[in-house]
Length: 376
Image 1: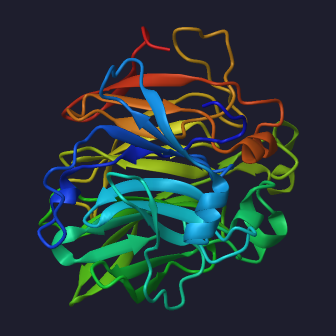
Image 2 (image 1 turned 90 degrees about the vertical axis):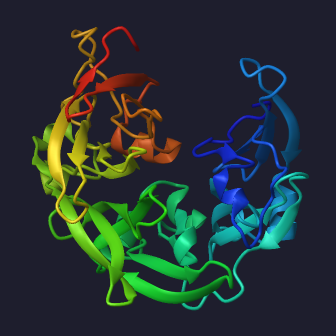
C-alpha cells in the first residue's frame, strides 16, 4: 500500500455467489476486484487482479474523508459481496465514538452508497457480520468503538463489561433490527462470525475473546429455536496458569494466560471448525458435523505469550505472537494463519514485539492437523 499505517485486516471480492440473490441480482458482475480496507486509516483500496493475478494493481483509493462524509462511519473492517452490492462493516463514527455499523459500495463503480441500516434499534457496538440468504437474515457481532480499541485494550472498560457481549439479528431485505442475543456481560468481545456454508442450514459459530469469570474463551452456536434465533455455548477453552514474571503487565495479577480466541474459520464442507488462541499459542480443530456437540480432533502450538513455542522446522527459535488470522483452503486440506492481531494490542500482550510470520498446516480429512515443515 502506498500510505503508511493502514493496518489491513479482512478484505473481500467485489462479486460472489451472493450477488446472484434472486431479489437483487447482479448477473453480469465479474469477480475481479479485491476491496481492501485499512482498519486504522479508514482508507479503502480497490485492487484489480485480472490483468496479472501475480501483480495486482491498485486502481482506486477511497480516502478516509470520503468514507466519513458519505457513510458517517469509520474504521472499515469486514468486506462481503452481497445481494445489493458490497457490504462493509465499520467499527464506529468518524469521531471515534459510535455507533458502528455497515455501509454499502456499488459493486461496479465502488462509489459509497451510504449506511445500510434503516432501523438499528438498540444496536450500538459493531464488529463482524454474516447472513443466511435463504432465511433473509443478517447477524452482527460486537467489539468496541474506535476510541475503545485503538490505544489498546483498556482494563477499566473490560472489567466493567463495556466491550461487546451481544449478537444482533437483522431482517436482511428490510435492513431492520429484529432481535438481540445477549451472551452475558462477562463474555467480552464477541468477534468473528462463521455461518454454515450449506444454504439450507440456519446456524453458525461466533468466537468470544475472554470471560471475566475465569479468563476462558469460548465459541457459541447461533441457531433457530421455536421460530426465533438463539445462542448456545458449545466450546469453552480454559486459561492456563502461568508464572507472573513471564506475563505482560496487563496479566500479572491474574497469574494466568487467557486463550484470547481472536479468529475462527469453518471448512467449506461445514465439518471442521478452526480456532485461533492468540494468547496461549494453541490452534485447535473441532469436528462440528454435529454443531451442537463439537469434538476436538486436532491441536498444535506455536508462539504464545508465555511459551513462545518455536516452529518445528526451527526448534531453537522462540516465536512471539500466536495463531491469529486463519484461512482454510477450499478443499479443506490446507490451513494458513498469521500471528499479529492489531498493532497496539500486539504491544500490550507481546511488549517485546511479535515479529511477522505465517505458517501452513496440513489437515487430515478424517481429523487431525500438523505443521508443514517446508512452509514458513
